[in-house]
Image (cartoon, rainbow, N blue to C red; front, side, top):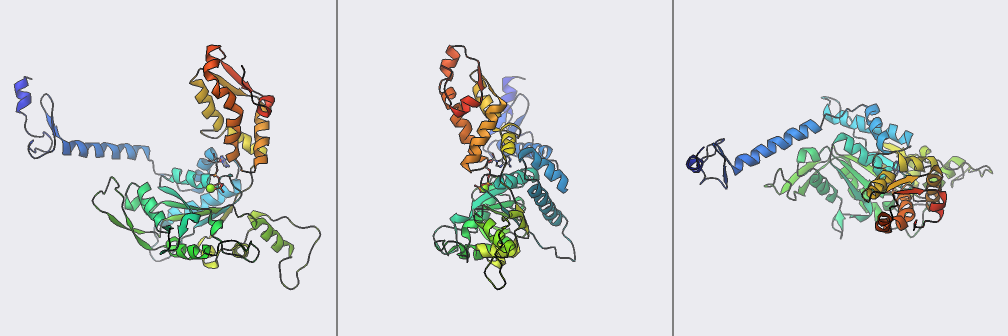
Amino acid sequence: MSDETKHSINNCSFCGKSKEDVEKLIVGDSVAICSDCVELCSELITDEIKNEETPEPKYDPEAIKNFLDQHVIGQEDAKIVLSVAISNHYKRINNPPKDLEIQKGNVLVIGPTGSGKTLLAKTAAKYLKVPFVVADATSLTEAGYVGDDVESMITMLLNAANGDKQLAERGIVFVDEIDKIARKGESTSITRDVSGEGVQQALLKLVEGTTCRVANQGGRKHPGSDMNEIDTKNILFIAGGAFVGLKDIIGNRMNGTSIGFGATVKDNKIEGDLSKVGPEDLTKYGLIPEFIGRFTTTVSIKELSKEQLIHILTDVKNNYIAQYKYLLKLDDIELTFTPGALDQIAENTLKLKTGARGLHSEIERVLMPHMFYTKKYRDNEIKVINIDRDNVLEPKALI
Ligand SMILES: Nc1ncnc2c1ncn2[C@@H]1O[C@H](COP(=O)(O)OP(=O)(O)OP(=O)(O)O)[C@@H](O)[C@H]1O
Ligand SMILES: [Mg+2]
């Protein structure tokens, strides 16, 4: 094609608009395309890619649990209960019954810090391919007070859905630290903030299902509309908290030592078991009954054992060891750990009482001297770092 022909193309070959009517006209050898058509094509392609990558997730509990198993170690009971709750939730919203009202059941996850509460919810959302946000209950306030009101969580969800209202309305909101908004209970410290009850009240409507108007902060799909009405009735709320002290409340109830007539004090006290939690224990802890009533499924998770911590280090997807192996490989250094080293790291982590979170700081501590000297290692042709128990007990560089 001659240069002359090329310059004579003045219209988009796809939509026919002339170059005066469009922002840009890209002219090829024998065709031209305008900026509007480029944008449209790009959206078509992205949607297609999205569709390819998004096979409809299966809603049967076993499939959900299988996915959770790949990312979350242990917590078998919690995974089963959560899988069933999620399965029912999405079955219900995907096949709304005609003349039967199926009540939404939100989920309450309780258990020690760093043992997988947030991870379970996050992993479930990943599987379901729905938007997911984590909100901290302690930063929420009743409407009219300084701070984020509860509806800010829905704004976050809409943002996570990239402004897609329909997607946001099927999302998952994880309300973390829910135990911190417990009101002053009979058996809890008198210094606890009483305002928590107000936040619980404010959450009731949202959790049950209401319409809230939220600002759309520049989602790509609907840049024009700045206010959105979001119906929360199909949004799954998962509340999580460590509930320190709840075990004792359960233990007391089961031992029959709670205040009241006929209470007997037994010598062999039953230790409180979180899996035996009942609504009365949560009320005693300081959650209001209306709030508890809206979280129909309670999932309790357990403290992780030493063996489970080792599994988390080595087996889950994107585990810490794989991450540090990768980092050192960039400097041509191979990183290995003896079983004794893994055992000691897990042992130290247990003492920290921060669950699996402590693993990260332990690994950092152990590898710090090595990571600092990677250049020296290279210069001295040190190509392997084998961490054994002694290196964990007393980390030091190889040179
Ligand atoms: N059961 C588990 N399996 C695999 N990894 C885990 C597990 N529990 C915790 N982890 C790791 O520890 C990190 C912290 O866990 P997570 O955020 O789920 O704690 P949490 O139970 O929500 O604690 P908190 O009460 O402090 O919020 C996760 O990012 C994950 O890497
Ligand atoms: Mg958490």
